[in-house]
Length: 377
Picture 1 (cartoon, one colour):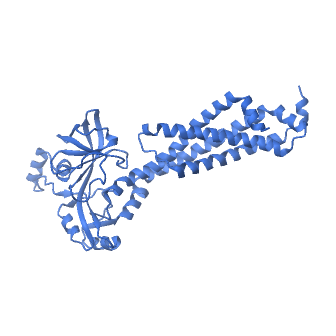
Picture 2 (cartoon, helix red, strand yellow):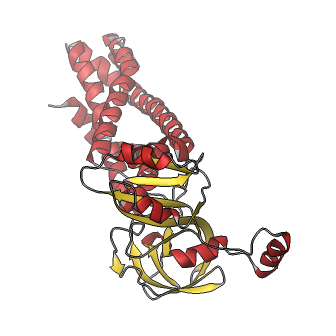
Picture 3 (tube, rainbow, N blue to C red):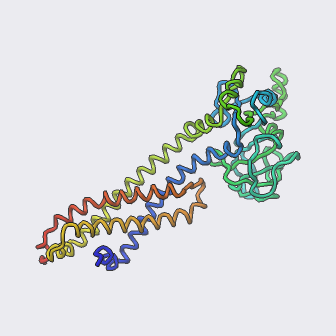
């Protein structure tokens, strides 16, 4: 007979309660891994959706995600004429608050020119932006259905389409408007400020400004070579798609990644300590039973197998509960929980290793039990 299974059946209620408790603890650790992966996925979601091969920004900056970047609107035509560029589009990015039906909501507003690079590559429902003003495409995270009306920058926008999975690096949902609407929202001065600017001779609030120009290259064009050509203009900087992705993951969201990574390590360490304590307690509760086994001639291998099998069964049941809990609730998390088969498998291996290491102290204690203890009072 399998002694580990027999002991579990004898104390089934306590074993199941222990598994549920461990499952909740492991679920927190597993969700932290998913959020860690989700932070990276969210940071790269927009750049991947735009399918940009080249990002042209203000010279001396690494914008528009990492730093503020401003360019004259006519830079788009200059970029479009570069050798190897197939299409170019100007974009603006700004974080703002809008009045939605469910209340004030913080979003990142992206302006682009319909028909040019800069818009989302897929529409989940409704349609993309057309030529009309004050239309909006919002990500599903904003919880705005097609046809909803929101107030943004003093103007009313109608939602004509929705996307899925497009959020800013901070987790705010992305909304897309036309470049003209976005420029007025971001760069147009209020009338009193415009009058003061005119009186000071600094302009009256012109809006022909963008944050970046993105370009898609012709087949066979070398992104690094085109970027170097763009940098020859002293007022321009350029990043390839690979450089932009590296910047997003190593600079923009790096602090969040490190914090989540450290928190995950702490959770795994706490889980290891708790699992070791539980296994040790379970082993000490069977002190007389183990002594009896030794008295009737059970080998050390049998004792080791009893403790190790219980530890692995406890870890497997707890981890199964953790996976069920996380996948059933991850849709309610405010940030994306990106968990795939690879993450689940790696975490299973880590939990298995923790169970084996956590059982070593218990195995040592079990092997030191004397058979005579079975005859004690």
